[in-house]
Amino acid sequence: MLRQVYIILNDNIVYQRNYAKGLDDSLFTNVYLNIKKAAFSKFAEETASYEFFKFKLSYIAEKELNLVFLLVTGLGDDFKNIKPQLHQFKKEFLDFFGDNLKEGNFNIIPDVLNPIVDNIHRNLKPKISIVGFSGVGKTTTTKLIKSEEIPMQHIPTITGEVATIKIGKLHFFLWDFAGQDQFDFLWEKFIRGSDAVLLMTDSTLENLEKSRYFFELVNRVIPYARLAVIANKQDLPEAMKVEDIERLMGQKTYSMIAIDPNNRPKMIRIIADLLDMDAEISPLLRPIFDRDIFMDKAQRALEQGEFNEAINIFEKISSICLELGDDSLSIELQEKAIKLRSVLNQLPSSS
Figure 1 (cartoon, helix red, strand yellow):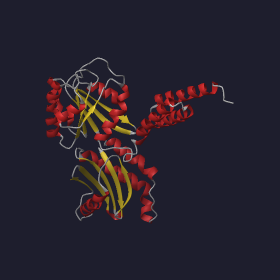
Figure 2 (cartoon, helix red, strand yellow):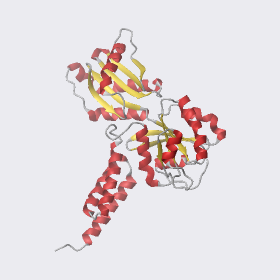
Figure 3 (cartoon, rainbow, N blue to C red):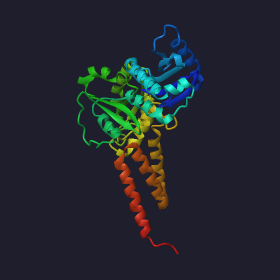
Figure 4 (cartoon, rainbow, N blue to C red):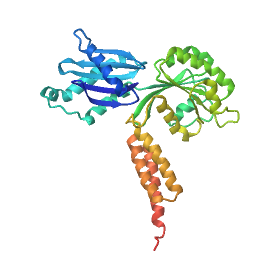
């Protein structure tokens, strides 16, 4: 997944866009010096990539302009997929800013660059894999994340399902694997390249013991991926407590009732946490966090009888939903605001 984008001109960062945590400012100087030394050497290749801690640093240089384009991705990203993105990025940048650079009259216009960079992110989007044995709720969780109708009875997934989903303005690959034992020969192939793995359990001791297999699989095939345990079916009487599951598995564990559609924001936050994303770091994820905050404020306003405030918040959330492309929720909230305003207008005014 694409984490950060830099443009460095004459040894100065002139553009930076973050999608997740990446290089710290304190590390950047040393990293850039190494990149510059490699990129501007006599026999340097135009594009190259190397690993730095848990990141892959890929760059393309324009020597005549002392210009470097740097993409910071996860270790699982294949350079053959990154390389064409670098070439296209450089071309589009020079097409727009090249003449100004040569004339020494250069000024970055973020509104021009941001859509170009966001398109690179779509092409290098994160891969999230949902793994676990049959019947633990993987497909239900997938539908919860995708905001689809929740299946109320278990239908086994055959081989697996791959979907491109949109959370906020960010795009993700979501892989849901078949959990039946007869498909275990496919699991290793399916999880390759994953940035995050959600290990689903049904919160029973028997299933948890079996699920240790997936720890071994992930550590062997994709040791760089982030992993979390999703303790599903917490509404059932035989479900173990999350604290006990976390202690038993030795891994960060989140409680979940995947058949409850109201848990979608919680799943989104789990994914954001796994990918080191938050509203401050990732501008494309901020609207969805803002929406959740305003939803809570609207509920409190209604409970406290502050109806005009609730109307204003509903209208604000409606605009955010429109921005996110969630037209149905936007219309629903607008209708709530209109209905509430109509009720208030019918109340007798106090003298």
